[in-house]
Length: 307
Image 1 (cartoon, one colour):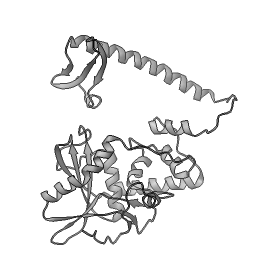
Image 2 (spheres, rainbow, N blue to C red):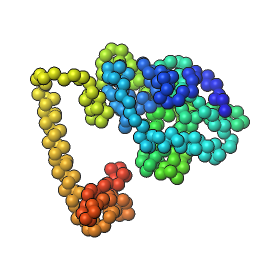
Image 3 (cartoon, rainbow, N blue to C red):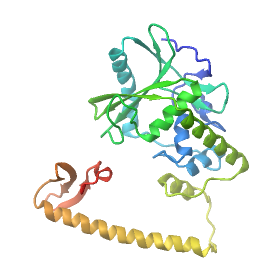
Image 4 (cartoon, helix red, strand yellow):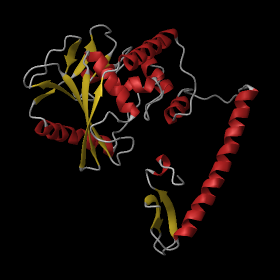
């Protein structure tokens, strides 16, 4: 079904991910929906510094192989879109492409689908996700989605000048949930302002500060290029911060080993551990029955078991 006209944006085209056209639509001094979350430090995959160097072209392009979760998410997207359409016969679901805001050509978005009511009315967006455990997703029929995806959706709504988005997630391959997000002008203005400042910093050659994001460290590792056999005289406070971090890390590792040993001891011969009905960890074993590793449950870090 042909996507409807959107008065506040223009359709650049429907491009397959990874093609030259797809890359060109999101390259240079433009900001896409997924990049907006990285700019404000809310992306688990990219940091402000890593994105800055990508946009500034100071590093060679790095090819990242899609993970199994990414591949299956792509495969399942049309299936989940069909499920949404079946649940909502009052709505038309349109495939779409990459859009640019008419007010700010550098503001780009590629929503998964556009929705129009069968009896007329304003268009809305449909964003489709998959999740292994449902971490960060609240009760269905609310707006409680992970903050990274909220940034993405708010950016998409602002780019296209729309007011409503439906977000659908399939958890663990069987738990279908729907959420709705309405455009918030305060959030949209915050993201726009930060994105504009980010692009200005690229033009000025001023990268963001170093932070603890894994993507920042990977970026800094790639920055120097050829290394020469010289000595750098760094500031004492930088060296002291490094020394203290190493000390803290060693103490944390000691504490982790002690806590893991305590859990294993409390488990006895059990394969799995729970506390007050909540999953804690699973033991993997060697052929002789000894413990190979204690694997924490994925939700353990988000729960207070002592509460």
